[in-house]
Amino acid sequence: MSSNPPIVNNFIRQIINGDQDTGKHGGRIVTRFPPEPNGYLHLGHAKSICLNFGVASDYGGVCHLRLDDTNPIREDPEFVEAIKADVHWLGFEWDALRHASDYFEVIYLCALKLIRDGKAFVCDLSADEVREYRGTLTEPGRNSPYRERSVAENLDLFQRMRAGEFPDGAKTLRAKIDMASGNINLRDPALYRIRKTTHQNTGDAWPIYPMYDYAHCISDAVEGITHSLCTLEFEDHRPLYDWCLQQIDLPNHPELTQPLVDAGLGMPVSTPQQIEFARGNLDYTVTSKRKLAALVEDGLVDGWDDPRMPTLAGVRRRGYPAAAIRNFWERAGVSKQVSTIEYSVLEACVREELDAAAPRRLGVIDPLKLVITNLPDGHAETLTFPNHPKNEAFGTRAVPFSGELWIEREDFLEEPVKGFHRLVPGGEVRLRGVGIVKCVDVKKDTSGKLSEVLCTLDATSRAGQEGAERKVKGTIHWVSARHAIEAEVRLYERLFTVADPDDDTDGKTYRDYINSNSRRVVRGFVESSLGDAQAGTALQFERLGYFVADSRDHAPGHPVFNRIVTLRDSFAKATK
Image (tube, rainbow, N blue to C red):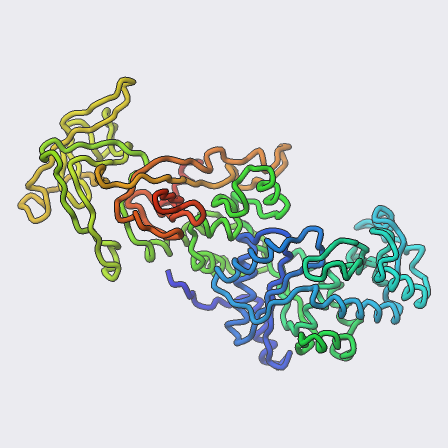
């Protein structure tokens, strides 16, 4: 699969094409990716990242990374660093790294303007009272009893809020719009709340913080964003987005953005256009940050980067190539139609990337000893194997061979069934790269469990011999027991057993659907060439699947390999 798929047209690109044709925004294209640093990014975020950075790149524009840090209680510098690492890993570089907190002074000045213009007021209603006054979808709301405060009183109260005079929750600043609006978001929404908590960037400078809807549109405008691309749940918020921009009118009030100019953060101010698209949904996952955080905090997974997690940190540790994720979202497309994509489609993209990029190695994850009885004791030789069957540029490697081998236990059946074409008593099979062996006997331990398969090697079937082309139905892989390296192998499957773990119609929650077999750890053996494998190295273990040396736990003398994905979609078959 190409890492640079062709540009696919969609409704967002059609809008941008039209803007380019009319010269809107002066031909400029500026987008942004604005996550809140309250958790790790997940696969759904990757769609927005690819879209925003991809659009900017394709039109010769720029994309900003902006941390929406308006709620310091939920935010952490750890998440900030993780977000930056994820964007870089996906292959993108931002033009500017900004924070909503960079604009706190401007956002405050804009609020003062709204108050002076009679468009905002200080309200003393509690949160419960605000909900009571708001009304319902079928009934209009009621005006706050504080709505008609004078401009002078509102300015005084808001400045005292800014000075930290009032306790948390005592007052809010609300927009004065329309309590009878059919869009509840326009029923005098809160613009500021009192929250006396330390902020990661501004410390204790601000006892009040702007609400997301208010801060977001101003942040877009002062950064010169031309197209504010966001997911469909913000469609009902767009009228408030546009109302704020229209009332504040930043392009015609440069005095409001002077603090940014003074701080060296000034950019061309714009009137951005918000465009919504359907978010990226995958089956067999949950992407709620709250639920993902609960999985971590309750020890149901081994951290935000657990390879079973749908976080970008998790799939990166799992071994998913960044190019596969980019290609997956390109194939999924961009529309306003909400849909859920099968996880198997993403896994297919992963397989296609790894099939082309991953060198091949030999490994056995459920070992059974195979002894070749007609080779002399201590027999050892070196065979040459290609590193990739489809690409000679990968070169070759030396693989040791001896008279004692490890094979997969499932490659031998003492009582064969119909259609089984691997090793059976009295039967023959080809050892990959060696020749044909015949099972002549078996050994069992004291419990009756099969411990060894005894075979003879047909010397005439070896490379260069007259019988090398003799046909047998099965070929199996192996590693030399004398030379193999013991390894911890982690076999990962999907974290949930049902396609929609968020479906609570039967009274269950996503926790009830956690797959108890989503992580199995086995002791296996890998060929000696992997003794110096570096963490993060992706490989195909022939006939078994794609694996990666774990980025956290893999070390010299302690090899740890994670299964990235099987060679085929075995999950769908297993769940039928």
